[in-house]
Amino acid sequence: APTPTPVPAFASVPASASARANSLVPLTDLFAERLLLADKVAAAKYGTDKPIDDPERERQILDDVSARAVALGLDPEAVSAVFRDQIEANKLVQRGLYARWDAHPEQRPTERPDLVKEVRPQLDRITTQVLAELRETSALRAGRSCAPRLTVAAARSAYGHELDLLHLEGLARALPSVCAGR
Ligand SMILES: O=C(O)C(=O)C[C@]1(C(=O)O)C=C[C@@H](O)C=C1
Image 1 (tube, rainbow, N blue to C red):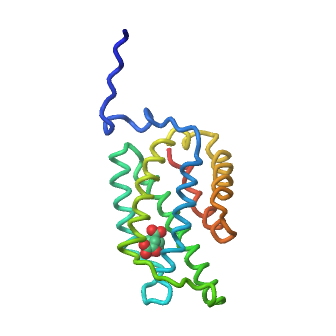
Image 2: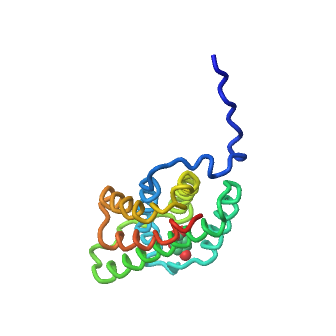
């Protein structure tokens, strides 16, 4: 019987060798999930003195993903750009929700989730999944087919997650760096 080829340790496999994914839908699904969490982030901050913008938390996220990108064999600049877009998209949704809640007090959240204990850990789990998906799709994202595939994937994720107009605008804001990751 043929001896199976030994599988090298994960960290030593170049990103290109394991970048076998043929779809961007898992990635755009994660973007949509992250955007839906913006509702919880906004609910955690609305009516408190904590501003939507937290530059220190943003820097933490970007430093963390850059370091982890290197460990995964990905370009840290390209990965940072993807996460900067996720953060901008998240703030776009948060601002939209604030405007909605200011104008329609009856739609305001009735509970205030704990940002640090509850909501950020959920965002952090998505970060790990996004990094894995970026690695998985690195070959696909470098190719010519990336832009059309991304458009179709985003449409599917928007439909699948029943995104409203505001979250659809957020999803559009989340996409520009995806195909630049070569
Ligand atoms: O964690 C927060 O406080 C958020 O508002 C979420 C988030 C993000 O998208 O990760 C967005 C805006 C802040 O500037 C920092 C981080």
